[in-house]
Image 1 (cartoon, rainbow, N blue to C red):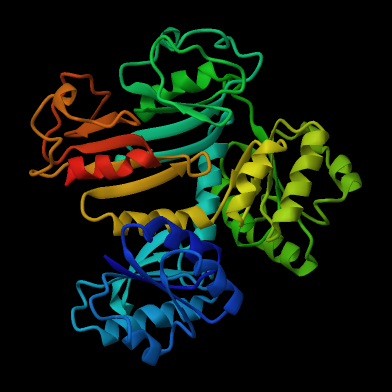
Image 2 (cartoon, rainbow, N blue to C red; image 1 turned 90 degrees about the vertical axis):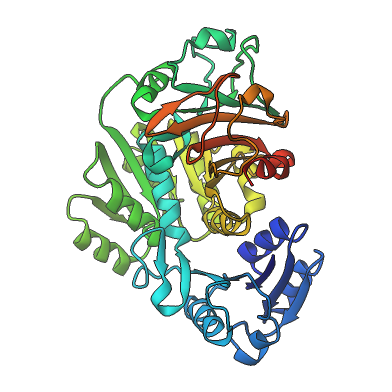
Length: 444
């Protein structure tokens, strides 16, 4: 595929990095330093305005995908619209625009084909939705849904006082429609077997039918049933949208916002939420607001450094779980290394959506976990797929991947060796990045 990426910032760079080995990639950006950084990859780099029709015209011939991810919503929208007007084959070229202004979009991912944008993504809304899913499961550090909500994925941390420490995987006794797809231990990624022993601080990725996941949550400590106390630091797009999502859930909610006018706006929009005008790094304010009694503190300001400081202060004062936003991808592992329970990035939602489009037909969704160490990919099996029509034990499936769940005619199944995948089945696969190319071939 030929892919044009407009914007060589954090998002554009990582999209180029994910695609350049198997795609013909052109990157356009007006910033010289950003161009120099992405030039380290084997891609064609053009310094200029990505919404300039004369520049676009030089590269749109035979292009399959145009991704506009600059820091300007308007530039991204105009670039997509102009590209659709220029190309002859409008069906062939798929366009993706990243936007941040809620005036343009009211959900994480939307279609705007009438104005020339096949996929419009709001990373901030995607991030807020992701955090809301994590909050719904107090002991989880990541949560995601697949197959139109018929499959749920949760990542848990095994605490030192958990009764599972020292037991083998087979002693988990999960329901037949649930499976532990992966175990992350320090820097290692393990596809677990029944004899593998669970250790303190292991991260377990469990995938299964949502109705059966309550039992899994109980095994990791979600039994109290009490209302959780949640504090959000930062009332920007992410903080406001998150508060809006969980306002009427089982949470006692507080928001700390440093801008007085923005605080007043939030208080007016969310009358049932306590909004405080102050600095989330002010230790006296945190103590006055009994931060030590909070179940979760979420730092989602526009500053990675401030989010880290707020999180560490909250942790030091006794908060059970802290979640921090990190716009820079290289900070995610650092945040978690120094004590943040879950570092979340708005960048990944855009990267995942582009990867889904770039990998061709049959892929419904992609979720990257543990700092891009592995992916969970949902496929729809087609008639000609190599994986269709024969028992899984006879399929040459790579060692670093596992078919976790199959949804067949609305029924969720954990497949065994004798299971036969049929055309139209929704198949959820856990795979290390090294195995993705081999897995993709099986579904072509």
